[in-house]
Image (cartoon, helix red, strand yellow):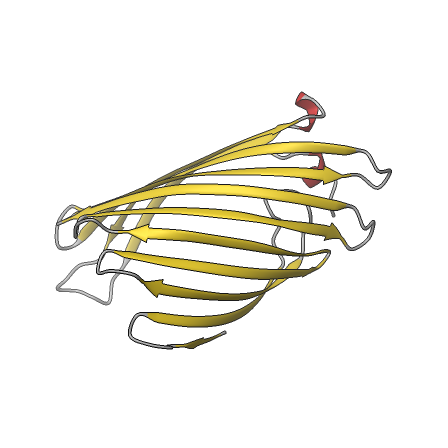
Length: 213
């Protein structure tokens, strides 16, 4: 990737990434993406961004996204974003129309840091035989960090997703991930670090995800 600082208040960036992990939408297991974007600071409290992303490998297409980040005080921050685009399956040429939106917020004060967000994605997918189906997905993210003392920090995370398909309950999906941990890093003995973490994970993949290699 690369970044060009156009001025004190704006910049352009270009990034390329190749991802071999499965996506939550079940479209593909491998994908690459070229992202061209810009970010501008409108005031001391607000900034805006706009991106265009070209995806390839097993799904090909262009998606566009834009959003606003707003920090009314030093403690609070709020962000909204919107996305749309069309992806095409490289093997079958079937197209997927995607629409999405998100809202997130965060709070930081002294030893406490909280963040929470919700995303909604709607996919209108074409099958190889020409038939169409749609899928609505809600994703909730929550994170917490608390500095208990100079040596220890408490960590927590809760992510939950719900996916509903117009083809029926058999094609629905979702997952829940809950994490609770404690990080220990002594100030007087900085060569020693420890992390104790408990993770609960419950996954119900969609039929498209379960059928992939």
